[in-house]
Image (tube, one colour):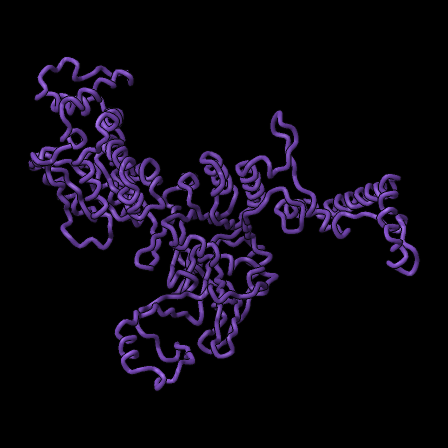
Length: 622
């Protein structure tokens, strides 16, 4: 049994600094280029015994750019023409028009440190002489430890680059017995790291018998002697079969015909070559070549037996994930997997992630899939963000009261769908999401919310939404590192609404407010004439609703009647669909609100916190 209680990273790949203290299992998710894969790679550098056997990579050292001038020592001198050969005017023109180039700087060393706790007696023996007392948080104790303190061990990976010799060096060492300042390191033997219960799940083709295949590793772990014997029996059987093939009269006659052509059979060796000297073998005749050639085939339906590659990517992905689940069932093991669930359907991704979480001592899965995150507890989610090149990690705090528990429900119902988006726009309820979402899908691609990295979510579902719920969801979203925009109706000023609006402004990065007296129902119908409203309303019986304008004879009352019906029955999207189909136009106010959301979702927005959507004027026409 072993578990990672702390991961510290300094100048490794895209991370300049990271201090991550997991709470049990870990599922890594977040915006693109925020460092999910780099965290899994950092853990592998320390825990994978094969990491230091591979050639170190210069790209593992953290790089950063600057448009300013680099230190003289960092600049490479290039050979240039003599200045006397260039006219002075040309030199001045070139200097005036020159564009500063981005200069890339690189760290000359990186460090990854891992603290391991929950060590069973066998693992403790591996680190005899290097164990340290741990504190209540599961970290290496810095002060006087309690007499009953349990033990932990710290392992660190160090990669250095010597620019003078252009050489890279990397190794894993014990920080407790090393002195980096003096260059003294006590290295961790590879045999010790191999003995650690660590499972690394690698993507690849499933059911492979070749040496690097997951199925081969599973076979060797279960019964290596019988596995080898089975392979040898296969090789013997293939040798017998190919020998019989080579002795077939049809084959020997054809081979002799080839060798006798142009009478060259005697030119190949010391004696005349005939079909008796020719045999056949699978590739080069070795067992490894034979196993590479053997590929899985499946009979899944009436189509008969087909090679695995003919069954589609989903079948291969499911079987590959099943192999991963089996490998992960090492008791008490740390299981590492990058981009888990990428090729899986939603239910299978969640199901297999849940199995790995339940079987592993500690799972570290990075993913782009919200379905994988659903298999974990909220406290186990580590969401990663990136802004202006700087990466951060975010973890939810423990619920303090019933209000926190209620807000936490919004993680799975609302925020998980936005887990890879930089920003969320929180509306008052699901009808707002449906209406704004419909309008957004029909806009030009460059103006859609997805182009701005925004996901529309609702503050609650059904009757538990409203402005009072927005601050709760916003707080949860902020803890996970989202940039938060609220979208609210233009409710009439009152003591309650003013207090709620003030709370929303305090909880969010920006607030988009519809014009005074305008709710989402009005925002999607104002500006359309009564003929268009009646035409759209007449389609509602197709969805099982009564036409709300059938009994309204006064066109001046049509707008008010349809707003009330939308508010009561909630068929916003269905009505909008008919309205847009009838007019070929989108509602102006809704479009203006979406533009304001895009403006407020920009982290560099420095204008007013509350963005007011301008009301329709008499000159605004559809």
